[in-house]
Length: 201
Image (tube, rainbow, N blue to C red):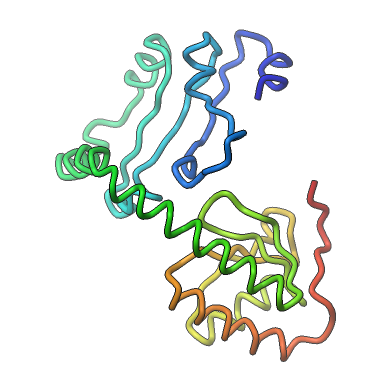
């Protein structure tokens, strides 16, 4: 991020979405709150929808300087969060044990999924979040439909430039085992090697 900020004019406001930051355990993950404290012109967005498990509450927050926060407040829709959502968010921030358990469980299941996919010869992009980009033997949309017919939901990634890939959320061990079992059946019915058609750098 240092190289990025050095290349951006100071008057340009950078918005960083850190929805998945709580899952990250890597030491070299950039801390954009430190960039903000260091005077960088940045807004950091965070959510309670991911590791806190409050997706249905539709609540998150932005961290920035007073001037930017005031501008955002002036265009904020009235009553854009409920009292219940705010109470739940405050309680979630205090429940550090839940976050610790969720992070540990996700790290364990990411390692399991990556190991099992690699053992099957599937190609994927290693992750620091709670999902994997997995390359498919055919079009991602076709793999998505095949998995869906057996009750497993993934996201086809054609809209993001990866026609032969799906996004797979990391679940519990039983959920991940079910995904792998259905994945095996779908791949067995599909001819050709599992390889990407889009370049990943």
